[in-house]
Image (cartoon, rainbow, N blue to C red; front, side, top):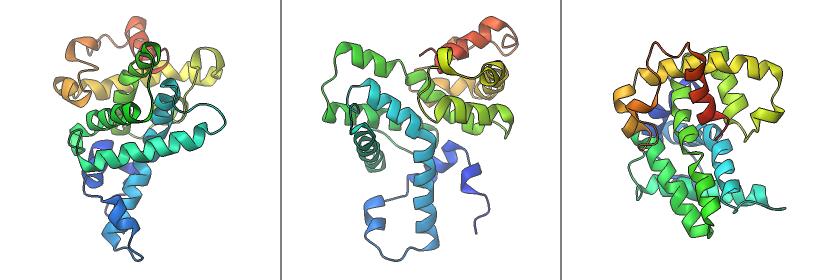
Length: 224
């Protein structure tokens, strides 16, 4: 029906579509137009891409714990997304999407729970990883992109102790491919990542073959 499959669009392009969604209004209608159905599908895809990270943030904050942690996390995610659509904490369009979503997540945490300094620092420790998610979606379709999506971003992982040998062996190559995508937008990094990652923070374009450069991305993705 659509010229491009929504699942294949970058997060930035999906964000532009999501920006036009009024989820509450759409849910009240019994019949959806093609555009409305597309908008709802966009929302579903964005939730799929960020649910693991958002659940991780909810857990680190101390809000989504205990027997009802899944229900609490789901409620937190939906409330944060509704804040995003309202635009109170920044524009959700295009390159501003990740920063706006991050601000909405923090605002919803402030409304839902009282964090200790340790919990607050734990949440902030995820920020660079959170901001790198948008670049994964801009990578060319490849084994490395699939590895990052599934092994790093789907659900919270302790890769240092639990991950399989296959993932560990594939991670350096995935970091290199991710770096190539990040470098292409080097001059926009501060805007894209809400100053979590800046121009001077990333290795030079020719340095990523060095093991130390790969370790930078491992720190942001795995050891955060």
